[in-house]
Amino acid sequence: MERNVLRLGFLCCFVLLLVARPGSAAQGYKAKFKVFGNLPSRLYSSESVGNHECCVRHRKLVSVGYDISGKEMVVDVGHCSRKCATRSDETESSKTDDFEPPARPLSALDRIRLQMRQRASGGTGASGPSHPGEEDGVGCQGNGMCEPTRTRVQQLQLMDGPVDVEVIEDCHCAPRPPSCERSPRKKVYFADTPFEAEVDIGVCRGRCSTESHTGCKAVKNGTVTITGPNGKGNQCIDVVKECACTGDCYRTSQREVYYESFFNETAQEFQEREKEIDVGRCMGSCTEGHHRCVMRSEDDPSVCLMSLFRPKGRCAATRFTEHRFISREQILQSILAIDDCGCK
Image (cartoon, rainbow, N blue to C red; front, side):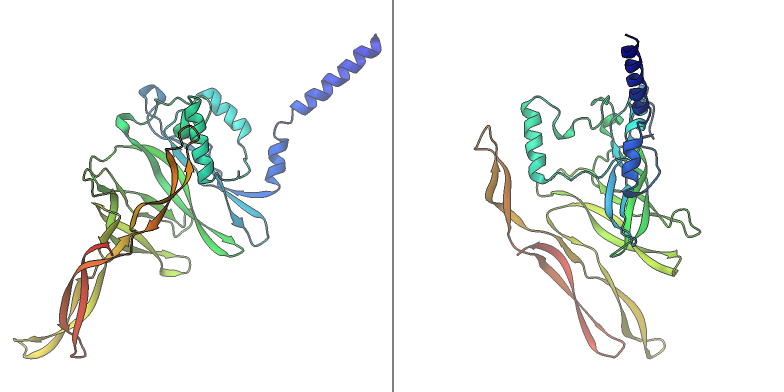
């Protein structure tokens, strides 16, 4: 009898020792990967949950490649979610998601099949809660958007060379624009260095009511140069200046500057001046009806879930204007500027 009691006591002590080491599995993963980004797994950046405002930053670990020593580099790039988590979930998350190895990404076929199964079983589908304890109806007020407040551009040295990785630092609720317009989007370059610079690169947001317009897109872009550790103006950043509702094939602004020679009547001599021309640029693609159905619904074979599209043509200029002027070499120069774009 006493021997059985001793054996039972020894077994209980052994089990307690195993339970007292919950982070051992996570530590094993940490030895295999180099993790960048020590941001908390969840940040409450909007109003309190009691006010039905919640825009949370969740962890999103992405494998970006291998560094020069051969170790896999995993970055917590983060993502914004309009889901509120309870305190118990936050505590539980701090125990379990100290480190998560990168999972195999789902293919498009896997996503569709998963969504169909969840719909058939009465689940939430692709837009369901991504964390336990989160409620669907709680998010940003007035159908607002949960978007990044600040994004940091982090440069990492990989075997194939340097690569820029965008890391979301914080999230907030933003009102949804009633129409297509440019909204601010801030990115930080060379963070935590003497060359730190914040640039508003802009983003196009809003709805388009016209049926011929497929989306709110950038129609005028620009560039901004910032100073880095390798010299003044060594990095050029593309920024959005204007947005508009356009179709799949649309015109964007692109300016070119030339020297124009003209005769000054007052000075009675030829002089030079700058001539700026918006030559334009055609963007987008051209597609038509599906070519062949590659996946159908198991419940209803008449419903096509995935189709192959074939190109209708190329997006090219359909209307243009010719600009003529005398160059600094006293030669008549002709420049064609795109007025409109379409599928050909």
